[in-house]
Image (cartoon, rainbow, N blue to C red):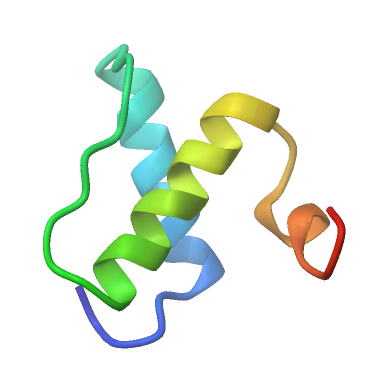
Length: 58
């Protein structure tokens, strides 16, 4: 995982999540890998595009 994951990293991870029919996300390490894993889990739960979930109170 590169520092500061980009939107395409999240969406590529989410594609893999769906393709493999995963039930949950586990992250290891910290920082960027956790951020990306959290964003993938967010998409798995809420759908849509990750940029729709940016900001306070969303």
